[in-house]
Amino acid sequence: MEKEREEQQQQLRALRAEIAALQRRLEQTHPAAALDPERDPELERRRPAGGRESAGDLEGQLGRAESGLSFLSRLTGISIADYSMARAQLPGSGGSAGENGLRVLRKGRLAGQCHAVPFQLEFQLLEMQSEESSSAAITDLSIVLEPMEYSALSRFVARTEEKRDLFLFFRSLHFFLEWCEYRQRTFQYFKEKYPAMVQLPGGTAADSMGLQSPHVPGFELVLVWTVHIDAEGKVVPELDLLTKIPEQALTLDQKEVVVRAPHCFRTLLQLLGIEAAIDSLIQLLRTEE
Amino acid sequence: MASSQKHVFSLTGVLYQLERLEAHDQRSARPQDGHQGPQDSETDLEAKILKLRKLRDELRTKVKLHEAGARIPIANLEPYEPLKNSEENLKMKLEKAKAFFQAFHLTGLSGKLTTKGVCICFNTAFEGNILDSYYVDLIIKKPLQIHRHSVPVFIPLEQIAAKYLETNFQHFVYSLSEHLNGYSGRKYQADQLQCGFSAFLARPLQRNSLCTLLSFTYTMDPSGESFPFCARLVYQDLTTTLPTDVTITYQGTGATPASWENQRAVHETLFYKNALHKVFESFLRVRENFDCVSSVP
Image 1 (cartoon, one colour):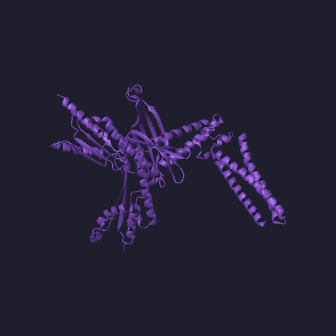
Image 2 (spheres, rainbow over the protein chains, first blue to last red):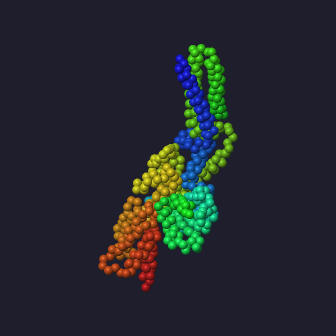
Image 3 (cartoon, each protein chain N blue to C red):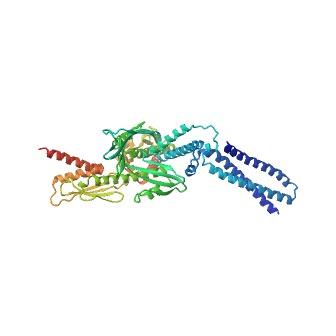
């Protein structure tokens, strides 16, 4: 008897807990209804349209479009602030339909940000359509990137304008900025870990980091880490080690350790990767007496 | 109004019922601890359990309905609420959002959310020419899954996915885009050479499916009989559109004039640095110039 009662009491407690949980859920779903990005488009398409329904439908569509756009921005690192495209007169032809089929010229403008770098593009798009095939080509491209704090980008911009390769522009810019962000994080990490040894004269966003020996004043290693974009649009990081050593010390360096240091560092990079290579440099400076 | 009122009413209704039940619960709980006979308390408990069960079931259906209702824009439930956005305003915003979607195509990466995840579209181009698009349809769950795609089999999609799909989704997308653009670009160059400059070629150009190995025999003089040069272009990096290895040999028998060796070396450099069809365009220009000069008496 006693046991049965206890079981019932337990059941009651469980029920109450479940009811409370269900209630919380009910309260939560209600206000979030309009913001839910994962709405089923099928479901909404089936709803009758017209009158106020259509205003709601518009809002739903807008909500979906906006969440889609924010997803794309997160995915690509690119956000768009302004975009327009308009049909333009084809130079040197009266009508748009020639013997080679339909030709349409459009002029467009696109502005936004890639990571944190604002860009502005102007371009011409020529669409050609014949019975057998259709094609499109960017026939003119001009790029404004600002601020041009990265000198490596100005040559890249000029080359991209010449090749009119819009997709390559975004790809290279993404990889370039990704490397710069990685460099900044790495510099910051070492500065925080070894604040006394690590010197960042140009700040974390600059391309060099100094490592000072805690034991021998005037003995310094400088890591220069640049990011390049080559002629094909490939992003290549380049790391070099420079040494700042007092004259007197150099005369004592009979094994030419200092001279060989940059070469040794490159080998170290290949063996260990960037972070571990820098760390091992720091360990070396710390332990030397 | 009706629907909104019903909605609010039902919500408060549930709360009211719950409050009442709780009050009842407390009232009946008090004597239970005291001197009530076991007989009484048992029926009491049973009744309570039944009541609570009923309420729980009601709430369960409500939650289900509500969660389905979350798919319906809130404006539909409360049509008399003053709309924050006028219809005109909404339409304008929607047009703008749609245009921005279009604009993403210009970045080479675009896509849309699907019911289960996301479908990403990869646009490819070589220099200004916009080429094929490819799709990857992903299901968003753990682990992230490629549901279907139109990426050619010889593109190492699985390796790229294994490397980055879980750890760095953005990098996965850009890396795949690099591969697809590399392939499209190499294929485009080979096609252009094949279509536009077949007169220069002894026979159709040979290539592997990834277009990372191209081989062809060509001449500088399409009107002539001989095809003295044999080219082999290798693209070791799958993401590039310029060859990493160029080998030009001449096929002529007997003694080869010294000028040909010069030409061979010049061609090698040209193939390293320029798009394939651009090299042949330059051959064509040279020949036209030559024709011009030779036709002048």
